[in-house]
Image (tube, rainbow, N blue to C red; front, side):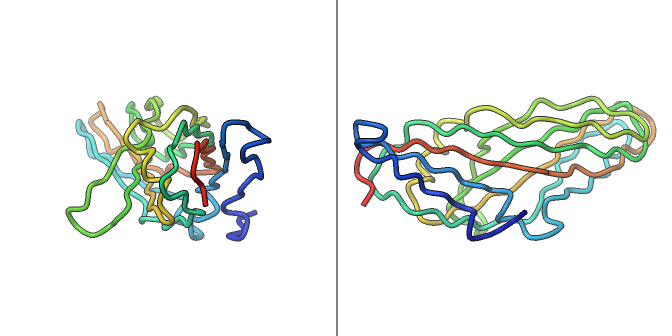
Length: 180
């Protein structure tokens, strides 16, 4: 269930709980996605590649100020519902930014290895890994923006068509030092 109030859970794991002034919080990125923004339809023309993005999603964080981000681990699931065409591949990218105005810097936070697809089929996938270095500093702010991108490559003479559906996406952020 998507409950915006449960979007960010701050665990009381400061100092004594984790030691050394650490705090851990989970960001349920999926809960911030408006209904239907969790689905990215794609059409990949013959013998080409495309990237199709979901709308930007605003994510409110507790704001960690001058704290240092130790690590960010991501875990999620998606499925590729290919309707026709292929063979080809469909992959997922997660992009994050502090500002969505044109020309603002955007960081590719995570790229998932593309999965092979062909014809009408559903391919389940797991999104797992660490966010790319450089994206970490965004998590010291009180607001960030996230976008999911379906990346398709088509090696056939017919269009590859379907949709990538995100089913869950959670980030576990470990911070050190000054939180308040």
